[in-house]
Length: 517
Image (cartoon, rainbow, N blue to C red; front, side, top):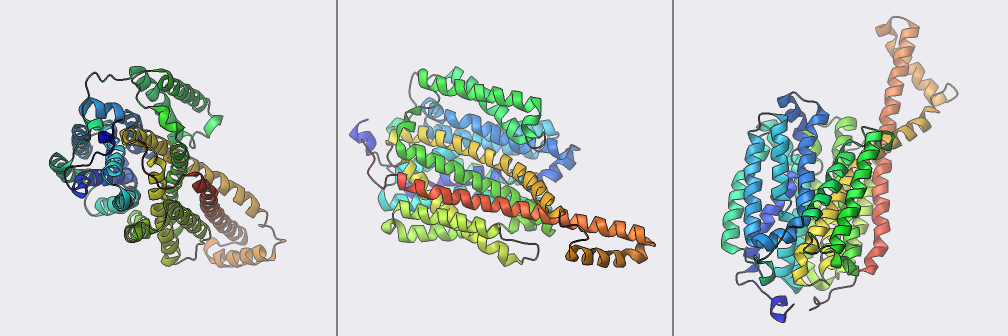
């Protein structure tokens, strides 16, 4: 790669240049979670079960996962600026189709189309941000990028809940239309392509790579989505689909190593910063999406929050992310990326551990404070790790590296979201088995509580036997509630331990340095 290519700078102000990609990234990341709280309303509109409505979420993620590795090819085929505008256009049209869908099949297909358009946006935004800035300005730009990627999924349930409660669920998709039009206009005016991201002749699609990618990711997403309900590998069809996904993954990576004009270039995996940084980002993304999945559930099922309030309870996480972004923008390079990452992982671990100490007698501040700390940790870890993972790569490798990295992060998030449902279920059973041993008359606390409830039900039941039966049912319900709470607490503590484990890996990443030529 020539010196001229490596030192390319945009002719327009780079802050104007990243505006459309940041807005589009926010729109894409928001739509990952904005439909979560609207699923019961969507299921009711089409008279389908809650399990069938889940495909509204998974079709979006599945399509995004498939298109992400194709970013480098698509950029060379269309040119990155043209691809960006095309992706936003597809995403916007698909959002309109989601809002006017008349059946569950139509909205699932529209969400898949939305995922195909949206999956291109985040890797391109990351590449544009990394290429357009250097030094202190890159620190500020990456802080904004990190805030967008982290805050948008957090705001999704809040915005989705408010729109669904006050308007109607189709408007969670209709709001993308004016935003998409604005992105296209800004991109047409400000976005520029460096020489290595322009449309290139004789660009061919890796057809076999694309085939094996679909064989890998489509069954994998179904396994993640349905595995817990089917009791995982106790179901033969889960075993078969998993085998197909594993074979597809092996053939995909084999085709990328041996083939020419491949979908992704795996030579970036030779870079130590990239391989360790990507591995850490996979874990952080898994913790982020898994915690976003279970915290609203805990607040709704155990605390009695409605969908909007449970989403609103996560708002301090977004405030923490915003605070961390401001701190990073002001302090900048006076603290090394490595130290930022260490602070971030410590904040994630501390916030997770504090959430693991919750009980049913908490007040809102007990939820707000650990979420605020957790939000700060997301920015302080996500931003420097993302930067360090790509800082030793050449600029012409950025688009390909960003696509592969986002694919693996998406898979990590799917794994985390799926495993956390199993963790809650299994830990609840374990804690219930431990607590039920205390439900005996030899336990004075249980005996006293049983007698108190029996006495309180005597007028309602009419006789002692029926009253004792009702008292037993109430105590068992409390047992189930306590065991479920303990399961959530254990899971949050596991998140904290996972973040503590990542801390030594920060020392394996090389510090700031100029990109190699």
